[in-house]
Length: 88
Image (tube, rainbow, N blue to C red; front, side):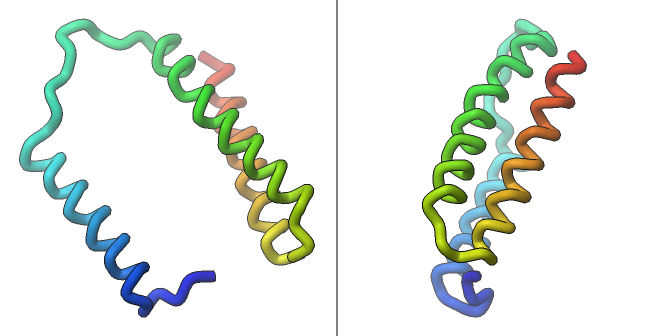
């Protein structure tokens, strides 16, 4: 697990904060066409599938039990998100 006091983690947190702050002050242009739930669900499934596949691969190749527990949790959360998307 990364040390929360390391400069790299601090920089990442700062970048995320600045990005969210920029979006609040200057939101991106939105299309005038409303997005349907089906389109949104379709657009979310592809990255979720990639996350699940990578987590599965890492879980199968890892010898670290602690890491495997995290990867198992990631896969469970992806399955949960897919279940929610399937309801729409």
